[in-house]
Length: 310
Image (tube, rainbow, N blue to C red):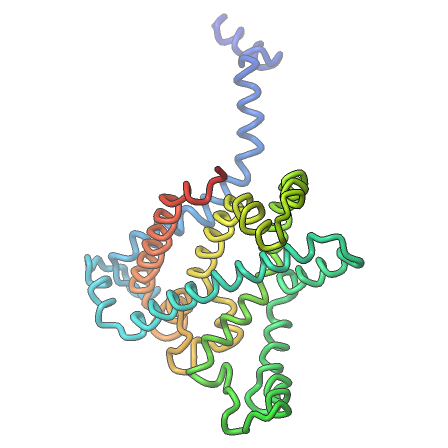
């Protein structure tokens, strides 16, 4: 009885917990809301998706265990194979062009020019602009009929029968999506490169100038080596985002014409919510996407030493 009373008294006075325990409790209290939200809305659904990949479920009937049947279907699914191919093509095209555009803009806007802040804001604007708005403008600009781009090409002498069909043409649709993605996201990575450029000591460039180095030599021997860690980060983020692409495809082509721009995430969306409500099979496709992203990320981190500063 006396021990219980002493415990209650310590609770009232706050002496039951040590100072370190109190600090830990305060820290956990700040972390808890975010972690609870992450656990409910991200962690648990991911775990359920892993389990559901081995099940058959349409959302109405009882869940049935099917083992590896969902994964066996992948080899016979022509839309899945097209989505794999298109996703890889999209990544191979988007990553280097976005990186080059972002780096070029960053180098230009890192110079002391008049109105530099305004130009930086203009470069960053596509990233923060509404996707629906800019996609609508993009579709109008690249309209096969009376789009501004084709009008300009006609004025330059391109015959009407040779004008690109852009998003309406299977041969040009992926190019249109890639071009839109590069334009939309290059501003974000430009800001990252700007931060990297401003971290390079000006003394290195001064010493190079005294040695008679030109602009290209300065870039090759100073700028690029110093930006390798930044480039590594940009490549990792770009690659992951390219494998997860969905919104650009949805707004520009809806995966068409045919399957010319069908990517994995859009195929998962269609399988789960549009065509068949086959959540088990959609989860199996999600696991393939997870494995691809994991594999690419591991390979890139294995080569991280190539991006480290000497």
